Length: 335
Image 1 (cartoon, helix red, strand yellow):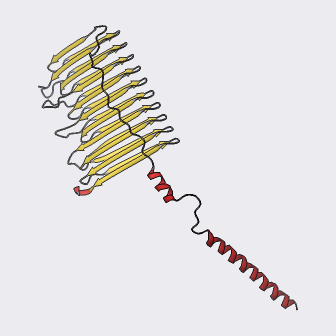
Image 2 (tube, helix red, strand yellow; image 1 turned 90 degrees about the vertical axis):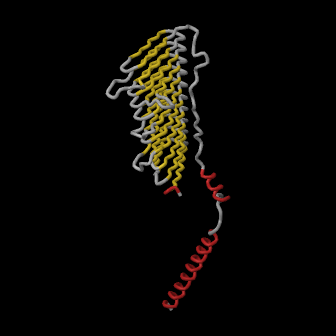
Image 3 (cartoon, rainbow, N blue to C red; image 1 turned 90 degrees about the horizontal axis):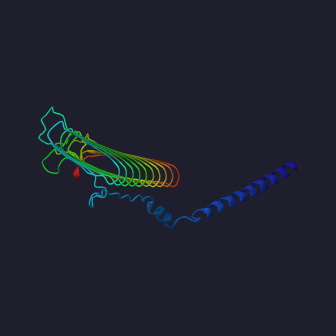
């Protein structure tokens, strides 16, 4: 009798377990294929693969328009030859400084020219033009509504290699423009204040030596920096601290040396900053680093490499609601 009870209990338990197992199985099968609120093709491919935002522009250089007259102070210096020095110092309002130096018939082993302008006050301007090699130009401005322009070399036959331009501005509404042609040139610009703009244009060649270096440093809000480099083995760097700053870097490599790399670095600390980097390379390589610390920042990097060139991009963002997009296009062997 006991054995019979045990068998009955055993069968009952197995039947119950089988029924539970069957129900559980049916429950799982019923869940397969059910939708819980996403698709619509995965929310239109996750909002069309989202990022994009930083539509950065910049393009600066204004001032002229009469190029200041009010106070009628003026410095106009013109020098031809080697080892010349020119310095204009102005304290007050509505000043203007013009310096022209030409050592394009430079003798190897000689010493280049030096041009320097110091201005303190409102509505100042400065315009330095240099031809030849191993020249140095410096502009220092303190105050509001200043304008700084440094132009080295010539779009035609006059070469200008190994030149150095430096500009520092402290105040609001300042503007700095630096243009250099040919090889081994360096441009540095520093700004402290609001609504400042830096633009640096460099073209190295045609003999494609070591390229040029551009550095821009801005402290404050709503600053804008633009760096354009054409040639080989160029280096561009922007450092911005503040909110609402914009950085634009464009590099185009013209070289047949696959070991050469144009390098771009952007560092932004603050909120709502934007960075746009565009690199195009024929044979040489593209290398980009963007580092953003803060909230609401946006970075867009576009790299195109042809004929065996390579792209390398690194974007580091720390904070909330940041966006980053990197687009790389390669065309191996010119196919």
